[in-house]
Length: 153
Image (cartoon, rainbow, N blue to C red; front, side):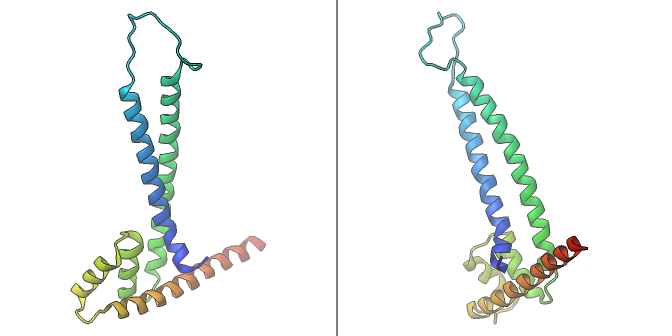
């Protein structure tokens, strides 16, 4: 796994949380649009008379999956914060936090970095970004190697 792939795990987890939230909202909208008239004579018009029950069950499943994904995203965020915190350069730490934790576009990262130091150019950012990714990769591989070695003992 590259340093960038490692850091992108949190981004992907956040996207999955948003996807599930959207799916949950859609099902809630569908449930809100279903009406039942208890005074009318029941005529079965489909093969499945319990569509509302199925929607409620699916909503419950999505809610459980959503909570699991939220916990996963929080765990990944904490793990990535720790890895970024191990970098020796505070500017690189800030750069990676803005890009991979706050998920800011490069234009905003560049603007924020220039507030700190006017001399921070796009080239400077990209150079330090590459260096930081290499260091993250080295650090996470060290963690993987030590975990594998301890498993062997």
